[in-house]
Image 1 (cartoon, rainbow, N blue to C red):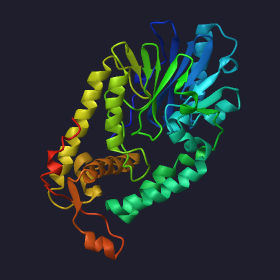
Image 2 (image 1 turned 135 degrees about the horizontal axis):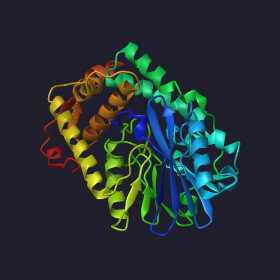
Image 3 (image 1 turned 90 degrees about the vertical axis):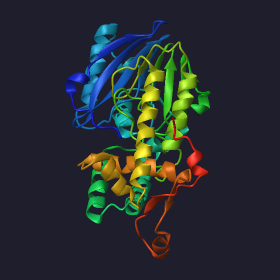
Length: 356
C-alpha cells in the first residue's frame, strides 16, 4: 500500500540534466492535503515537454505556476506556457492529470496518454460513475460493513468531482511509442495505461516504481489490466527494458532512484512477503476486509480504501492462481454475502513460485 507522503520539506524544486544535455526541472505540487506529487518540465532538441500536471486541486495549480516561474528565470524565457509543446501523462490517476483543464486554458500544447487510460481523461464523468458502481460491489464482496462502505465511497468521490473531461491529441501507440527522443513502455498494473518514459539515460516512471514506498495496487476486479499480476509482470518488463545505460529514474512522488534493478527487487520482495502473509491469514476462512485489518491494522480516512484495495489485489492474485478458494459458495448462490476465502493447499497450485 502506498502511504501518504506528508513532509513538505522533502518535496523540492530541483534541476537535472541527461548525459546528452536535456534539461529537466522537477516541480513539486501539493496534490491533496499532505499529499505531494511531482511534474517534470523538460527541454530537449528545441522541444518543451511537461510530464504530468498535478491534481488541479487546492494549491496544486499555483504550485505548478510557481515552478514554471522558477524555470522561466533559469532558462531566460518570456513565458513557459507560450513555449510548451507537449504534455505527456504517465497514467490516468487524477493527481497526475488533474491540472489539465487549467493548463489547456493557457497553452496550445498537445496532450498524450496511453489508450488504455484515454477514457479516464476524455470520458471522465462516465468512468467515475462506472468505477463507483464497481467499487460498491467490491466492498460488499470484501465484507466491509455498510457504514464503512459509505465512508469509503464518500472519501473516494471527495475530490473526483472537481475534474471535467478534456480532449486528448494522441495516444502513445498511435505514434509508435516514440516522440522525438522520448520512448514509451507500457507497464500496466498500478494503472491500466501506465507508461514509463525514457529520455536518453533518464526514466520518468510516474507511480510504477517509487523510492521508499510500494506503489498502491488495485484488484483487477475494479479495472481490467490492473491487478497485482499485471503489475509484477510489468516490473519484469521494465527491468529488461531499462538497461545499464539508465543512470536515474524520476518518479511521481519520491526521490530519484539510482539503482532501478535493486529497487524493483525490493518491491517484489514486499509483495512476496505480503502474499505469504495473506496465505497464512487465510488458513482459516476470512474476508478481504479481515485480511486488510491483519495486514495494515486500524486505518482511517483515505487509507481505509487503500488498505482494502491492496488486500483485495493480493487475495485476487492468489485466487486467480488456485491457491485460494471460496468456502461459502452455497451462501453466495443464495444471495449477496461477503466472499469467504480459504487456502486450498492444492499440490499443483502450491508449485507456483510466489512472484520472486
